[in-house]
Length: 158
Image (tube, rainbow, N blue to C red; front, side, top):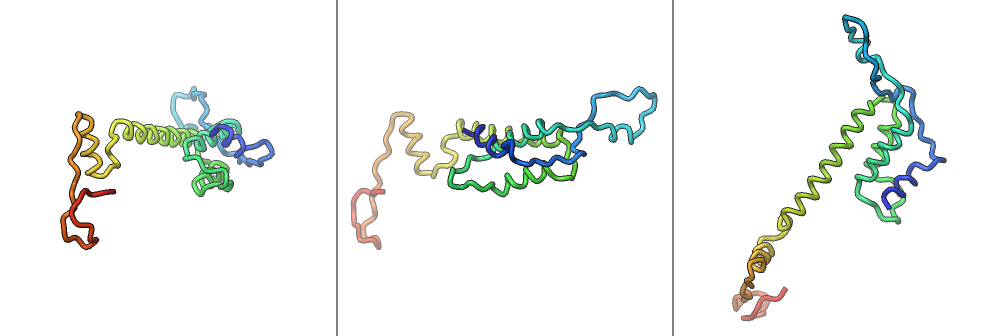
């Protein structure tokens, strides 16, 4: 399953180096009457490795599944892993916000396919299915005589 796959990606033997400055804003409020900008942006606490692993696994679940023959990570998986493990200090809130965006995009694509079934069909197929939906069958098309393929008159076969 996808969850098992995500678990295997981050096994306990996997070294998942987390820099000290993966920080999340603290929920503590300043009690001073004036607010210093360095206090607003400098008041961070350490993001836990468990939280980062959870976000990483969630990203893996949102990605298309790969066959077992493709054991190596995709370029997107590598990029996400490197970003999470990098020393850039990307806030966890940004990663969670991007994760919500990815989930919403997947849901949007699913709903679009469900409620617009003819979206990816050719025009002829869409017309044929629309006719069948109302209980009609389209007449068979006939090829024009004298075509280059030498088929002559008769029903078109696909």
